[in-house]
Image 1 (cartoon, rainbow, N blue to C red):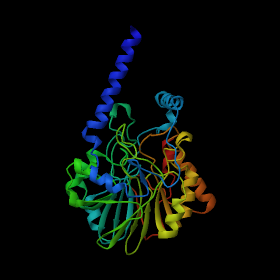
Image 2: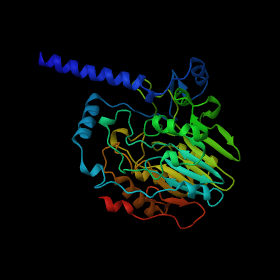
Image 3: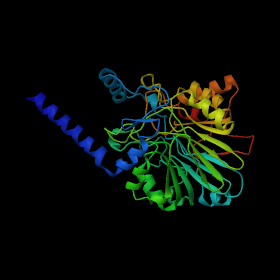
Length: 371
């Protein structure tokens, strides 16, 4: 009898979670049948799912899933900083004053960045939430208690670029607060359905496939491949596309990786669109069991080489614990490898700007204060 009671409770919890993930506002929306028919004409779409360029396995056995779950539940002090990370604060007036001055990129932790360049403000993967999950009570909190600037204090945002629809890159609450001060949203195929479900006007949303490009005034945004996957619910894996992005302005050529395992696409993008002045590259949340969809730090440096990047900034770390490695392992390993091969790397604090026209870029080892 006790067994049946426990089993019933577990089944009830699973059913509630399934309903929450697939019916809650955070989930978003689904592409129409007409759009799915259009997607079916693409070489990277098959049987209702988007595909990576090369074979990429996402499957773990039940034993492996169980082992990973146990490791997460057990916890490890090394996976979070010893104290909350302090951030540097941005002032909205300063952003306005800088509008026609020097180009700069400010990292907000994880993969959220603000690019100020040639009179425009561009946000990449904006996530202001305390957790990177739709279920707060089973998620670890952001390492910092605050964000460099609150959404309400941000000036007008000319464009938001989204790499894919995972919760640590596409946040319902953040988008809801941002939507009325944003000129345009650029997403990979399928992601527009989420934005439409959240009340964003269709004429502000632009969906692109890999290798598509679009003009945004004097800028060119190019949607380029990554090696990853997508999904916000239990049953919608790979029904939307994941991507990296090239941002080409009059003066700069910038690459944003989104999430990606290492693959030949980096060299392909570098050959087609490089060299790059600045590359914002994933470095964190990797693991042996999902090595094909998240790069190791040494691979991040190799990706910068493939892209022919003058300067790189490691992202996808410093905010959330989404893997089993020590929280500072990514930055320790990536800086060591960059020094070994002679790759220029910037390591700004959260909220510290990297000025793109300057040879003097942030490179302190600030994370050592949080061991």
